[in-house]
Image 1 (cartoon, one colour):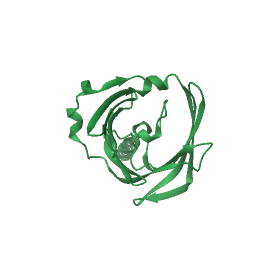
Image 2 (cartoon, rainbow, N blue to C red):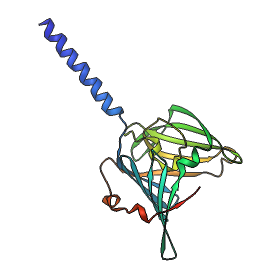
Image 3 (tube, rainbow, N blue to C red):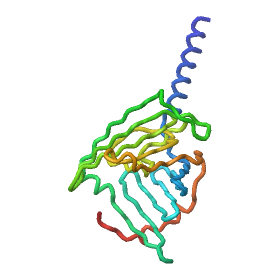
Image 4 (cartoon, rainbow, N blue to C red):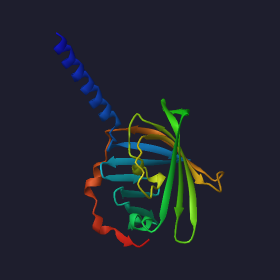
Amino acid sequence: MKTRIIILLTILLFSCGTQKGIKEKPAKVGFVSYRLSNEIHNYYFFNDTIKIETPKEKTLYIPKTQKKFTARKLRNKVYRNELDWGNLYKRWKTEYNVEKYPNDTKTILGIKGYKVMIRENSKRTFDTYNEVYELYVSDKINFPYNYYDFLKIKDTLNYSGLILECKTYYKETPSLSITYTLEKFNTEQQDEELKMVDFSKYEYQRL
């Protein structure tokens, strides 16, 4: 009887550990939509590729290489550009400071999130930029931070979560900020058009 109880406890503990691991594992597929003033920005997550749709352009973003393929319509003509942001970021020295404030919370779409401050110090070719990102994040779904293009992550930043709100500004001018607010999300919706992209139509531009 005692042996049986020990076995059952072992199975239970193993099961709990496995469930916790699944819960904390970053999600690789999903859809999030944000409001920026009167615009809607949609993000489709396809494991290693992100598709971003805004009123002005459509972008395919590859987080691993930080390369972007952008199609922008101007005067009835579509301009397609390939931009190697990763190669540019390697020329800069960027450091991050991340702080969490679990007691500072906000609820959006019925989801409660806590405050996260990201301070970015980026020494570029001719100047140094200090950008601040004030986030409210939920651990409900752990989308990697580098999937969110509006964070413009330039170096390794191993954090994940569902960003409910992002207010971003330069340290010197906090009044000149822009705010992204979550409109809707799920972990299933996809866009099959990603499979039909002809990358050869994109013109490479040096940054």
